Length: 259
Image (cartoon, rainbow, N blue to C red; front, side, top):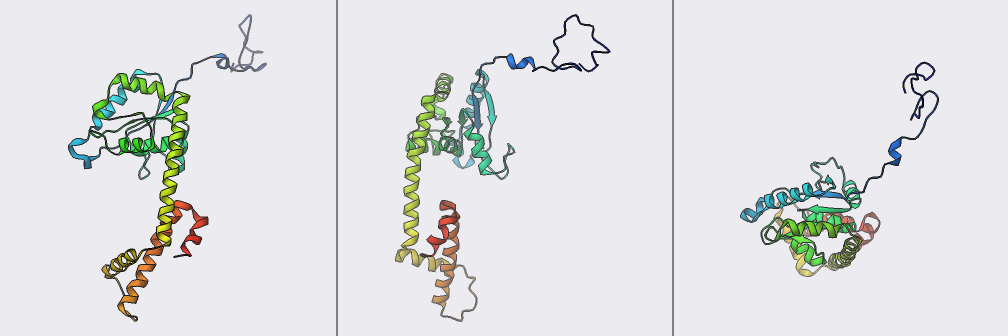
């Protein structure tokens, strides 16, 4: 009540939330509402490189029908950064938001990957006729909930929706994540080994690329030595960036010191 009850109180019984004489918790604390799924929706832009195989409109229409048919909180998420259409400013913000979803519905490869990386189930739709990147990725890591435009039905999407909102699906997502991490760690190790033990053929490629740059200053050393030095400098910069991306700052200098 805005007015003091000493000046205005026409009630025989007053159980106010707040007044000049008293304050109580709001009655909304007693309300009980069923919790509905919080679903991240990550849609890919039109992919013109697939030409007449793109079925993005079919996929998006199916997702819109699914959202309209079920009670849920649909959260649009953009996984791009330049620009980001949902005001997310970093990869950490994108990851953190996806990790808090009950599950994700997506037509985007990295929507699929980022969800599963965080142990979040994903209803994935590959918008390319016959399937492309998303189908191949899910098959590789063993995630079962993936559709192509040719296999889309409203009934199948409803069943997939129900499955993704289960603890069984969340456990399956974690299993797929762990499997993927093991494979990618092997790829990382193979990459570092290749950097640590360059073959003679790779050294030749580096030298030839340096020669093709046509940016060498008039050499004081024989042209071959200048080219090799330029190639080594270029190689070290590129290697630094890649190893830093894979391992972070702590191990980068140790790896580069061996090159």
